[in-house]
Length: 245
Image (cartoon, rainbow, N blue to C red; front, side):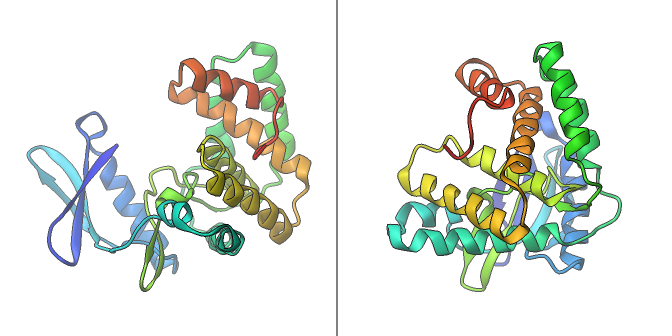
């Protein structure tokens, strides 16, 4: 949705791609609000327009993504990284910021646009109602190791366009869905650790987590996936697999 360019040693500009022009204003507002809430983000310095494209100016943080770090980590170090990742996500989810879109409401609309058979849509809509316990916290909803920058000063979370307010377990389920198809044994081990530590920290039942994964998969179909990716998401939405498998 965007391209990032260095301005100088301290700032970058994240420019909207033409087909998404204008979304940076929303992200700039989100980043400002979550930064004020104390979350570790690249702080916004306002929006600008370059050659007709909107962009947000952000602090520049130097370091690899957590995904790159996982690729290079020995097997014995992966579990502790997964636990730290879960602790960071839990901190985000425990934060309350008023005015963000309601996640269950958004997911319901996306399930209805998923293209799934009507009977499965009805089942998943009812499941969503059953799963939603009314808890509301900040859900990044694109929280995966590629969106965490590992810097000398700590871990920084980027890409906040999917933010919403919802149950923490919904955010965790989306994370498990996003990481499930990365074909690397270290990443697979990392995601298994994320699920295990996430359930331990939150005291959420396995069935509840699996239900939210089904909901997340169905909603993701509304993004326009086709072919093998769409087939896999339909399988997950139907409840035929457990993630990570």
